[in-house]
Length: 148
Image (cartoon, helix red, strand yellow):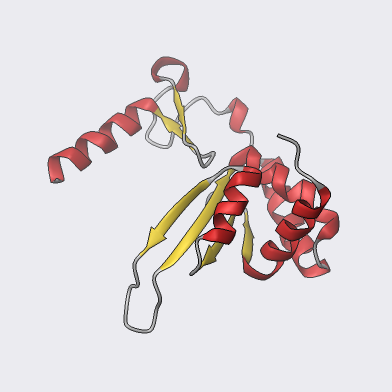
């Protein structure tokens, strides 16, 4: 599906106000936006893919919100596509995140965080774009099923 220019301008404006461009050693590489209203985030999903999450309030001062997330190379594509439409402050955030992303050698990584070899167990890529080894995914599902 081709994205028209008006949609890109809308997305840049929306992410300028409500979005985050994240790329650090402590967190995943991602573009994310939070909103009480679901409709604008559904529009982002239609444009760029990704995943919507519903978050209940943690305390009385917080509101329940929707969160849109797009990770990995897809997040990098969004940042590079919208870069020229963003404010200098957001451009700096995107540039910092992209610099970190470029420094990662994910293709060269042969082991997951728990030491499983990707070639042996395979890779699971979530709809949001993040990845994990299939062995860790199975273990996580098993743990979830045991607790519920």
